[in-house]
Image (cartoon, rainbow, N blue to C red; front, side):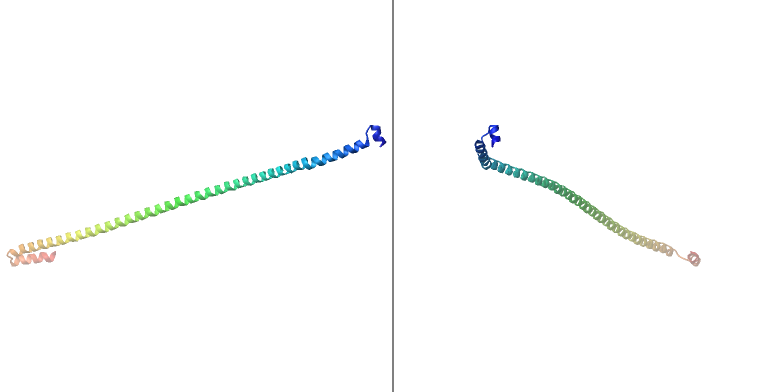
Length: 162
């Protein structure tokens, strides 16, 4: 204590100042530091939560972007499938039309051939009739002539030779 006295300090005043400082620290801790630390802790938690939410939002945006790409790829595939199906259908219908046209052409050709054959048969019938008539006329002319034995022999010889 003499040391404090040598320095010009009174131990009672020093004890009172220490007690006052402890009261001040307690009051500040209770009413200032504690609420400030609590506020800072809440703010820190809110900031951490905001960062976490931002990271989640970023992750969701990335996932949405990937899903969007997948949807676009799927849509493109479906569009290509639809185009290919339309082409296939068009090819099938084209082939059916060509086949039908060929069948119709074939049936027309068959009908025309039948018609041609009928006309040919008719022409041959007419030719036979005409030829028969000509033969009959020729025979009648030959018969009309009075035939003698020599002429008969001559005609018979020619017929046998032919």
